[in-house]
Image 1 (tube, rainbow, N blue to C red):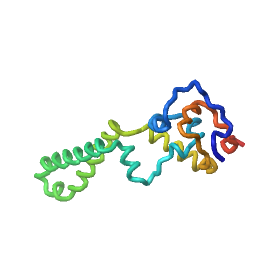
Image 2 (cartoon, helix red, strand yellow; image 1 turned 90 degrees about the vertical axis):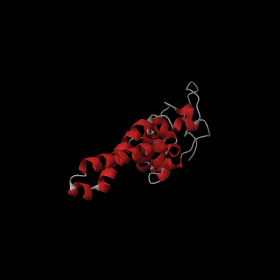
Image 3 (cartoon, rainbow, N blue to C red; image 1 turned 180 degrees about the horizontal axis):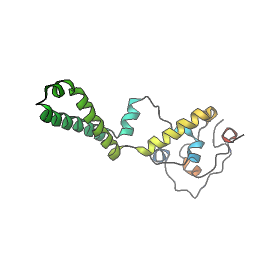
Image 4 (cartoon, rainbow, N blue to C red; image 1 turned 30 degrees about the vertical axis):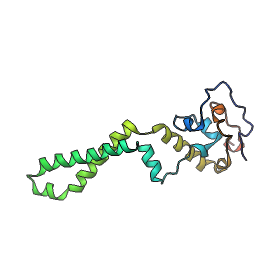
Length: 154
C-alpha cells in the first residue's frame, strides 16, 4: 500500500518542501496521508533536544539552576537544615524552571503537535504505517480528505 491512495492533489496549495511542512502545524487530514513523515521517535534524546529548543533552552536551564542555587545559598545560609539538606532540589527546581521558560521561548511546538498526531494515528490505525508519499508532493494533499478504507468509521 503506497502512494496517495487515490486522493487527488490540490494544485492550488502553496508549494513547499516536505521538510518545511514538518516544521509547520498541519491538519490531521494532511498527516493522515503520510504519518511516517511526521512521526518522531519518543525516546530519542536528539528529538527531545530539538523539540525543547536546543542549546538556547539548555542555556536557560543552566542559568535557572545557577540563579536558584545562588538565591537559596544566600538566603538559606543562616538556616543549617535548609542549607545542608536541599542543595540538589534547588538546582533541579531552577533547572526545570529555566528549561520551561526556554521551551516557551525556543521550543518547537508545531513539530511536537505533528509528531503527537502521527503517533496517535499509527497506534489507532496500524495499517497507516505502510503509507508513503512521493517526494516533495505532500504539499498537494493539504486540506484533501484521506480516502483510505481503514480511516473510515464503521
